[in-house]
Length: 197
Ligand code: ADP
Image (cartoon, rainbow, N blue to C red):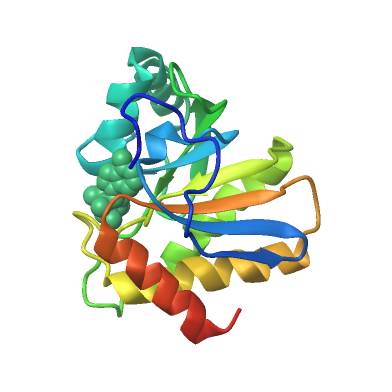
């Protein structure tokens, strides 16, 4: 069991864990706002206006400074396009940065949703590289109100990150896929096995 309010400094017992190109990859069940990593990824929307789900949880736990920085970004560049990522500091969260990426809304799969979801993961990893971040946590982007099929989303997440890590040796040493829901966490474990990464 997690203790409320306490930062999670490492993967919970029993979580799967693999090494990809020297980077430790953890699949965890938990709350992304509690992760003690340098960067946590927010499944934001294109206007960076805040919302429910993981977005709401990050702003609630991190405090108002994150939204103030989002407002600045909106003024400067109008928000973030689907598949892109921007960053702010992390307010009261144990992380240093929040990477805000806008996932695609699922409209049946024929509108580039898969490519755009992969782009979200790559954009965040590029930001991590640029900021010389050593550890990052991802939520299951687009699988909440954006309705992306969960299994397909898990496949894209794991495959995209694996490919990127293999091509970009750098400072990143730890990637966590953090799922709030048990069901989605199990799905990640199954997909990891079936992909044979
Ligand atoms: P989207 O709008 O991109 O679909 P959501 O926030 O609605 O984003 O959901 C994305 C995923 O994040 C969902 O699988 C949801 O269960 C999960 N989620 C919600 N809150 C948290 C949290 N605190 N930590 C980790 N995952 C979370």
